[in-house]
Amino acid sequence: MAKWLVKTEPDECSIDDFAHRPEKPITWDGVRNYQARNFLAAMAEGDEVFIYHSSCRHIGVAGVVRVVRAAYPDPAQFDPDSPYYDPKSTAEKPRWQAVDMQFQRKLKRLVALDELKNIAGLEGLPLVKRGNRLSVMPLSDEHWQTILQQQGPD
DNA sequence: GCCAACGTTGGC
DNA sequence: GCCAACGTTGGC
Image (cartoon, rainbow, N blue to C red; front, side, top):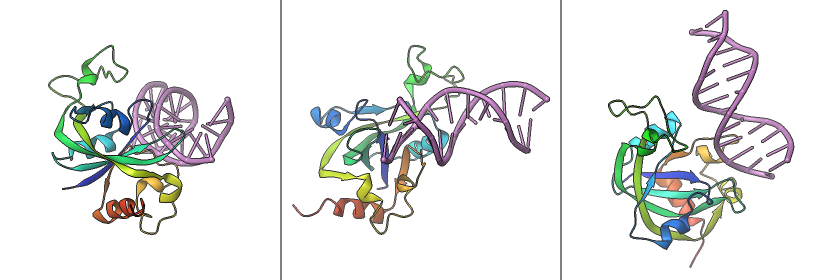
C-alpha cells in the first residue's frame, strides 16, 4: 500500500470532521493543480493518507485516513455553483479527479511542521521545503514511519 | 495582515 | 514558446 499526505485547512475539512462520523466517507474534491491531481489519480483503495492541517493555528500532521474509493471525475468541476467549477471540463474529458476517504485514526498528538523541519530523514519531503505548495504528495515508507515515530511513546 | 514563492494565464 | 502580470498558497 502506498502512503500519501494531503493538506487541508481545518476550517474547511479537519481530521475531526472525519472522526466525528468515522463510517462516512468524505470526498476529497477541489484539487486544482495538475501535479497534485496526478498523485490523487495514483491513489489506490486501501492506501493510507496523512491529514495535514495548514493555514491555521496548529499546523502539522493530525491523523490518518484511508482511501475507500480510487480516483473518479471530481463532481465539483461540473457544478456551476461550486467554487471548484471548471467550465473547460466536460463529462467526456474531465480535467480533475476526486477520491473518497474515511477516518482511520488521529495521531496521539499533532506532529507540528516545526518538528518535521528538524527531523533527520525528511529532507526530501516536499512538505518541509520553503514555499512548497503541493497539496497532495507521496510519502516513502521511511517518511511515513519517521513521522509516526515523532508522536513519541504512549 | 503581510509577503515570498509558486503556478497559471495570455499577449506577443 | 517566452515571459510579465496576475492570483493563490501558506507560513509567519
